[in-house]
Amino acid sequence: MNEGYRGMNIKHHFIEKGEGTPLILLHGNGENCDYFIGQIDEFARYFHVYALDTRGHGKTPRGEAPFTIRQFADDLLGFMDEQHLEKANILGFSDGGNIAMVFAMKYPERVDRLILDGANLDGKGVKPSIQIPIEIGYRFARLFARKSQEAAKHAEMLGLMVNDPNVSPDDLAKIQSKTLVMAGTRDMIKEKHTRLIASRIPDSRLVFIDGDHFIANKCPAAFNRAVLEFLGKD
Image (cartoon, rainbow, N blue to C red; front, side, top):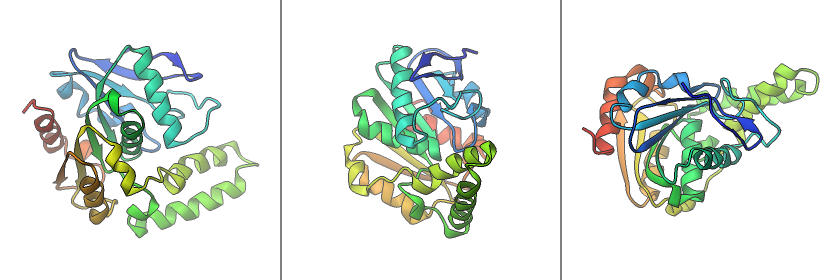
C-alpha cells in the first residue's frame, strides 16, 4: 500500500496495486477506497490500480480548500500529476462518478476510458424517497454547524448531494472518452436520469446490473465482468 502524495494542500491516502495502464477508482459520499474491496485485486490483474480516498474521506484530510465535486476533480488532477500519470482510465461510483464526470469534462485529454457508476447531474436525478431526507438532514445540519464540528462535517457531506455536481446535460458533450454508464436496476438514481446521462455523452455505452445503488460492492462478479469487457479485458 502506498499512502499517497502531498499536493493541493492535502496528502491523499490510496491503495496501489498491479502494473500496466492506470485505472483510478473513486468511491462515493462518506465512504473510502475500501468500497472497492471486490474490485482492486481483480482489476490489478490487468491494470495499475489506484483506489483513492477523496478529500475529507477515509484517511485523506479535509484540508482548507472548498469541499466540492469540482475541487475533488482538481485534486485528482494534482494526484495524477504527482504520480506522473499522463492519462488514465477512471471509474467513479456515485459522488466518485460525479467527480470523474466533471474531471472528464474539464480535463478530457487526461482520460482514456471513463466509467460512471450511479452518477447524477443534480439532486433531481435522485429518487425523492432518498433525496428529500438528504435535503432535510442538510438543513438541520447547517443549523447546528456553528455549534458543532460534527454537524459542520455532516453538513458538508450532505451538501455534496444537495448542491453538487450541478452539471447541465449539454455539458456532457465535452466528454471525449469512450464511456460506460452504469447503474443498478433498483438504483437510487432514476433510470431516466441515467439514460439521459448516457444519451448526452457522445461515445457511451449503457449497462444496468440487477441490484441497487451499490452494485460494485454487492454484485462484484457482474460488475467486474461489465467493466472489464468495456476495457477490453473480458
